[in-house]
Amino acid sequence: YVSRLPNDIPIWILAFYFPNIFIGLFAFANRMISIPINLISSSLAQVFYQRAADDLENNLNNISKSSIFLFQISLPMFLLLGLYGGEMFSIIFGNDWHKAGIIAKALCFVGIVKFSFNPLSDLFIVLNKQNIALYKELTLIICTIISFLIGGILNMPIIGVLIFSISNAIIISIFQFYILGVAGCNMIDFRKKIFKPLLSLSPVFLYLAINIRLNLIVEVFLILIVVSLYYYNFSKK
Image (cartoon, rainbow, N blue to C red):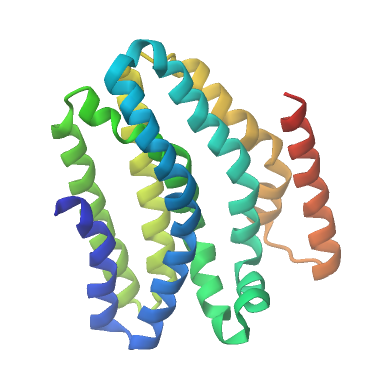
């Protein structure tokens, strides 16, 4: 029940402050973000849970490598969603869903973390650390409530969604890194492998930080070059 609350609380708070149409757009954007997580990451989590339960010591390396692999392949995809979510939703679903794409842009931070680190979530059970998992869920609940209350009080729902996305991404990462360390993973090596793809895509992150928009066609062309080079180097490895 506690683990379900972070998913339900946004709807309750949004319903108090904003009209139903925004709740529908948020639910739709959240569902689109959840599709690759449920289809790929959650399926892998079930396999890894069985392997970890049978022999954690010999399977821990494969489990951590798989999370790194998921992070490396999904980072550019979620980054593109963060840049062009509104345009992508408009092209795929129609202009009426443009605002849902804007919401999906804000959700991309928590989306990539869930997609990458979902296979690690069952380590709490394998290592008999359910109490730590409970602290994680309670922390997520508190941050979720605060995030959407800020958005509601300021009458800026997208800001609330963005704070929710970033804070949840940070919390999940901290707890998942912690449980990997408890399991005996080499965290220095793990963090280096997580940092490398971030460094490779640093030009795009820098462009986001500067927030100077170019002509859309030129912008997309340049970013696709960076992403293509990233995947080319990734495939060589």
